[in-house]
Length: 636
Image 1 (cartoon, one colour):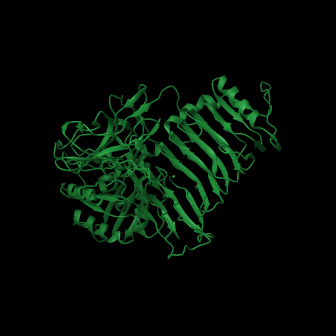
Image 2 (cartoon, rainbow, N blue to C red):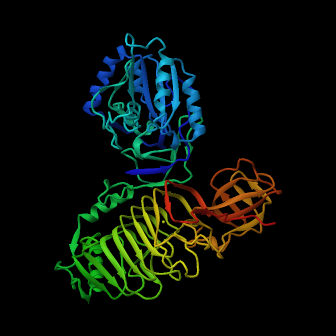
Image 3 (cartoon, rainbow, N blue to C red):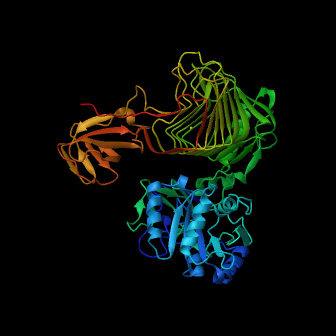
C-alpha cells in the first residue's frame, strides 16, 4: 500500500548527538516495523572502497537534501569515515525553508571538525566556496607535494552527480532521478592540487520504515512519500504521526485514514493504495461483443443503439462478483444513460479505437457506488443544451483512466461528492463559449488525484498535477469572465506542475478577465455563521442560540473542512475543525490553546481553502494569474 501524507514541516536539527538527526518521517501507531533490504552489489563494493580509500582522504564531503537533511544523512558514512574533517552540503536550498536551513547550518557548524554550506548544485558559483571550505578544514593540504584529496558521498538522488558536474565544468558523472545511477568510483581533478573521489550513492543495508525515510526522491518539504509496513490490521481510523526528529515529539495528522487488507499491488497503475481492490476485478473480464451469456451483445457500428447491451454486460459482471466489461473497437451508440455499478470496470480498446457516442444528458453516470472504473475509450456528447457527459457523484473508489471526453459546445464532466477519485491520462475537450458551464467540475471530493490530463476549452472554466490547460481566447469579447481552475472549498489539495496556456490570444489586458487559479468561496450560497460564546470546555464552545448554516451541509452531514474561528475576545485567532454542532454546542477536533469565555465571539464556515499546496505551475498569457480571495469574514 502506498500512502502519501502532506507534511508541512521540514526536518529540524535534533541537538542530541554529533551525528545529527535521522528523522522518522512517517509512523503508524501500534504498527509493526518492517525492515527493507535494499543494498545492491555496487553499494557493497562502495562500502569496501570507502573503508579502504578513507585512509588517504583529507576531507569528506557529504551531500544532503536541504529539505530533509536528517532523513538523507547516512549513519553508515559516519562509521566508515571516522573522525575525518567533514563538509556537509545542503543541496536544493531553493526548495527548502530558509529558516529551517539556517538552523541546520548552525547545528552542523557547531560540530567539531565540521563545516556546512547550503547551495544549489547547478549553480556555477559554488565551486570556489567549496574548495575554500575544504582548505579551511585541512589547511595543511595544498600544492603538488600535498594535494587536497576529497571524498564526496551521499545517499542516492540527493544531487551529488550534478554537483560534481558543476564543480568540474564537465559531464563527469551521470545524473538522473533514478536512485543509484552512479555505479563506480571515479577520480576527478578539479585543480592540479585538488582531487575529488566520487562514489556511488550509498544507503544503509536495513531500512526500518517506521524509523527512517523511504522513497526519499519523491519527498520534499511539503510531502512525504512512504510505503506502509506490511502486516497492518484493517482499521477504519488509523492514526498517522509525523516526527521530524527535533526532540519535541511526533505530531498527529489531523485526519485518520482507513487501512484495507486482503489485496495488494496496483493493477491499473493508479499510484494509490486503494487501487489494489481492482485486482480481483481485472481477473474476471467479459467481452460485450461475444459473450454467450449476454441476452444482447454490442455491435458498435455507429448505428445500432448499444446502451442496453452495455448495461446488460455491467449487470452480468456485477452479479458474478464484479469484473471488467471489454468493448470492441468501433462507435457504440448510447441513446440513453449508462449506469456504472459497484465493482465494475468499463474498458475500451483504446481512446483512439472505441467511442461511446451519446445525445443524452449524463451519458455515463453513477451515484453512491463503490469501486468503479472507466478506461481506454472516448466519450462523445452530441447534446445541444447544457448538461453532463460524465456524471459521477457520492461514490467511493472511482478511477477514470485514459479517457477522452468530447464535450461539444456545452456539456461538462461533473464529479461531485466522491471519496477516493483518480482521474489520470485523460482529455476533456469543450468547444463552448461563456454561457456554458465549463469543461470539468470536480467539487466536494475527498482524496482526489487529477494528474497528466489535458483540459481544452473555448473561453471558460476548466481540478492536479502535471496537467495541461489550454484556453482558446478567440471569443474573449463574449460577455462574462473566465475561471480556468476554481478550487472553492478545497482542502488537502496539491496543484503542482501544471501548464496553463492560451492560444489565439493574447487576452486584452483592458478586459476584466477571470482568474487562472481561483478560490472565492461559494457566491450567493454562503456557509458562514456568527455567534457569541456563553461557556467553553477544552474541546467545546456553547452558544444557546447557535445553529449551523444549512448551506454548509453535504448529503446531510457537515463536511470535514467545516471549522470555527474565535474572532474576538478571549482566545481570538484560534481556529479548529468542527466535529459536531448540535443544540448550540460546537465540538472541535483539538483542544483550545486558550480557553474562550463569555467575552468571545466566533464564526463558523466551510473553509474557502485549507491545507493547499500551489507550486511549480507555468502560466502563459494568463493575465490575472492566481487569486485566493477571503471567503469568511466577521461582521459586527
